[in-house]
Structure formats: C-alpha cells, structure tokens
Image (cartoon, rainbow, N blue to C red):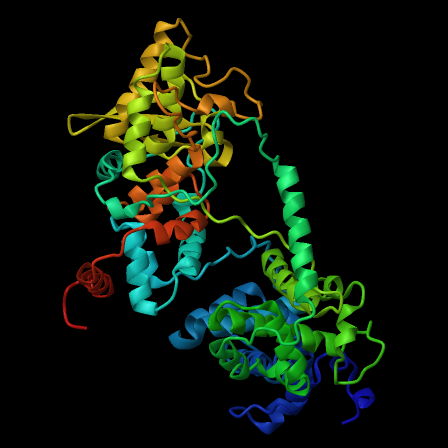
Length: 577
C-alpha cells in the first residue's frame, strides 16, 4: 500500500508498526464482530503509538479481548471505546476476567491505549530509579568482612579480569558510600566488630608496602621551589602535545584486542536498528573501535549506542542526503549529537551516557584528532614499615611542644585514620572522642568535609600520637574550638612545606607525605578483614579508584584462602549445587 493512500491515522506511525496494525485480524472473535469494531480498535491502538510491531500486536490483542469480555462492548450497541475503557473497567477486567499469568501485561496495554485516547489519567510518576548492575559475587562479598585485597583476588580467580569495573559498580550501588553525616553534626554508625577491626589495623604484613620511593630524593635544605599545580599541568600538556605530534606519523595504529573485535563482529542490533547497521557495518565498527572499549561487555554497550544513533541519523531531516549509506564526514556536522539527544525521551542520565560515548566515538574519528588529555598521575605507593616506625619515633621526640603536636598530627591522622589534608582543615579538640567497645576504649575522629564527612576510628597503635597532640593543645590554653592545625580555614596548605620535616639530631629526616601515609593506612586496611563497603565509608570515597590503584602494593593472596573464599561465596549454604 502506498504511504499516501493509508488511512490518516496510520501516516505518522512507523511503517512496520502501521502494517501490523492494518493487517491485524483477531483469532477468537467472529468475522462479523471484527468488521463492526475493527476500525475503532485500529484507531485506538494507533493513537498509543506502539514502538514496535510486537507491542502493537499486544495492544491489539488486549483491546480485542477486553471488548469481547463481559466488561466490554455489548453487541448491538454503539461502540464507544473512550467510554468503555475507564480506569475502573480496566481494573475490573484484569482482576476478575484475565488469567493470572497475563494480568500485568494486559493491564499495561489497556492503560497505554486509554492514556492515548485521553480516558485513563496520566499519572505523574517519579523518574525511574537509576539501576546499576552489580556482579552478584561482589554484591555478596562487598559487605562481608573480606578485605579488598582478598576480594580482588577472588574476583580475578572467578572472572580472570581486573576487578576495577566491578568495584566501581559496587560503589555506585552501595548506599553506604553516600555521605553519612550532616555538616553540623557528622557521625558514622559503625558495628562494634567493624569499629574494632578498623582500630586494630596493623602492618603485620611486611610485603604489603613498598620499600623504596621512586621519586627523586631532594635535600630538605634545598631552595628549589617546587612547580605549582598550574605550571605542572601546563608542562604536561606541552609534553603530551609534542608526543602526539611525534606519534601522528606512525603508519599503523595498535591492533585492537581480538576479544573486542569478536564482540563487535558478533553484535546483533535490535530489529529496528538492524538494517542501517548492516548497510553501514564498517562505519559502525570504526566508531566502536574509536571509543577504545576496555572489555567485550563495554564494546557491546557502545555498539548499542552506535546502532541507535546511526538508525536515527539515517533518517534525520538535517542530513544533506537521504542515502542509506552514511559517510563518515557527515557525522562531523554541527549539532548532530544535540539533535539526537533532543529527539529521544529517555531519562536524562541515559542520554547523558549515550551522548558522552558517541562524542568520544565521533571525535576520535575526526581528521583533526582527539584533543590531548592529561593522564592521571600514578598513585603514590605506601611507606614501608621501618619508615613508619621512624616517623612515629621522631614525632614523639621533637625539640618543642609546638613541633611535637604538629608532627604527631601530621603522622597520626593519615597513618592512623586515613585522613588527607582536606580532612584535617577544620579539626578541633572536639572532633575526637572515645567509644567503648567491649570494655576497650577506641579513639575516633569526626571529619567535617562536605560529602566526605564521617567518623573514623584511629588505629590503637597510633592513637597515642593523637592523644599526645591533644594534651599539648590543651596545656597551651587553646580552647576546644581552636583549630589543631593552622588558624585560617581557607589557607592553601594545611601546614607549610618546611614544617612537614621533623627535626632530627643527625641526618635530615625526609619530608612527611600526608598522601603516602594515607595510602599506607589504606593498604593495611585492604589487607585486613574489613569489607569493601566499610572501607569506602571509612576512607570517604565515592569511588574505589584509589583502592584499585593500590592493589599492586598488596601482597599476593594465599591461593588456598582464595579458593575457599570463592567456594563459600558461591555456595553460602554449604550444600551441593
């Protein structure tokens, strides 16, 4: 049938859907009955604008069954679907006439048709909750007292992959990652066992830390001023741009991973997107490879974005041609992605994800190349045990009370509770309190740092440093609301660089790196029986990126323990599977 000769109500519907509606004939009603109601039924289902032929058939079947039921149309009377298809009649029909197996499906179809013709009220539903897929193994283990290092080994043994993406998905789905404290009265509720575990974190495992600092050693008395962050970024951009120009002349790019290629070649788009994908398969493959997916699953997800986008682009009115074959240069037109996003009614988060992925695909194919990006600097490794013991000894033996207080806090807070410089900015004496756990006092520190506000127990073997600093602070006549470190909240550095070097009687001591001390605490906690969820909460992390970066600094896990833990997680009941 020519498009212009179709009934008016079919002209705005997708051709395949329109054909399904126009050619539909029900099976369980008489031909005479269908002749009387057919046009009205087709018009009502067309108004619902089903998105696929299968959905159109479902709507048609549901409406026909409803009209043929005792609740529906009485033969011999005038058919008025709008009057019959009320919310009450739909509920009566699905509750008392429809079988249990199809209640939900038929109710959904009838309500969709009723909303389209204006008789079923359109509710104001809240946007669907964002769902995050989490590997069941990680979900089960993430809240159990299994250290991050052991959990990573278990995941690698089970899946043969680096657990970064799985840790990330767990963090997004884990409700405990969000800030657990208001700015005025931050607090974190810990189970006694977890509180005790965090307080008992030790460095029993010598292999859990590195024993050397790969960075260039400098004399503390040197007058060379370190580069500012702005200058360092400028240098990095300049170096990366030069490297990009040098690499531009390379003839052959790095060959994509065979697993990634196999995932792309084996990808089968959804039926509505299949024709355009098959006609532009090479372009689609180039777009997905330009994204540089990191896994087969990631590649398939990008394939889905590309398939939907190319199908939309093939019929986009903004194209200069309506050829089914899409040229690569067409994708570089101004405003293409904005038009694509505006034409879809998916959730804002879904479209944001699709836009980001497609922009990366298209920009990477642009002849001018993708702009140089600054790579994230590698994580700083933890201190070895001997260096930590040296810092603790020096902190207790400074020549003045002011220096002792300062070094005790600079060593004790990151090494004992995993605080970084930003966490220390607003600390006062009132930030600390003792909690009784089975008769054992546990020193805790409450951090006020926006979304990262939390209460963290201090390690038992480090708590004495903090108590020493608090005694000196009180003896100096400082009020409980006086800041422990510095006096100005918005200062650039918590402590000047020169004040981070402990005073010694002999050779100069190394400068204290708060970040390395914090990472030392993290690695020790990762090697203890503290769950991933609790570790994220204690560290104030919203993502486990630093945790995964520090995994190489953890000791190898015992294969027997890994195998036993994996078995227990997969079969918690202990029975035969």
